[in-house]
Image 1 (cartoon, rainbow, N blue to C red):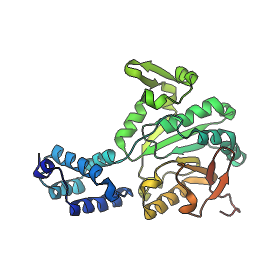
Image 2: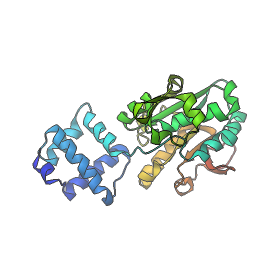
Image 3: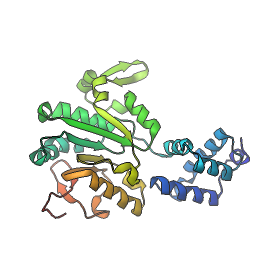
Image 4: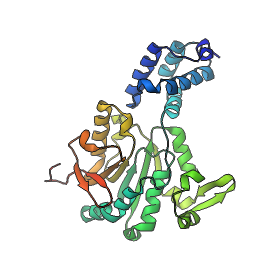
Length: 287
């Protein structure tokens, strides 16, 4: 283990240098209060790669052709806290109001498209699929595509497996757990193959235009509890990418502590009985 790793510290200058680099790469900004969280993971990666100094490790990580070590850090430094039917009122709004309105102006020559970003370990996009199947009658006659994206490659692999703990499924009705999950030892639950195959998982950095330019023609986006981790500049970049990804008339849901009105005037604020959503104006409509 390196001397820095043995001492258990990263210098202030090293922290600031890494923070600026990580921000440029991901849009995520670490406040001083996150020092311990960041330092601990940097020291672990230094030790794992046999680097005696931060300077040596930082150069290795920055210039590695495969960028695998950077991805390792992204996986370690992103937060993935979620469970099925989290903030359920937004799923209720989806099936009670938003999608029915979307269908009124949706072109009939393509599927209805929903994007979950960031999707974490899959509970959100699978919740979308479950809610459509259980509570939205038009699903019988509507072709729907669900795309789920995250910056963390490890968490995407976990999402594709569809294996969950009791905590993840605790808010699901018993009927849904019985119908769509297989109970396994140690209070684990395996989502059935049909549900897992209904979601397409992809790796995306929302603040990188090269990543997001292929994401277009969505009718509904869930982007919950991500923008709170960005600074003002990254938030604007992310919101512009989300705006471009939506079809006119499409909607976006944010997390309960987030508000589009503080970030951008591009969207119309829509207050439904279940939840607030933000809409990309149709042609001729103002924001």
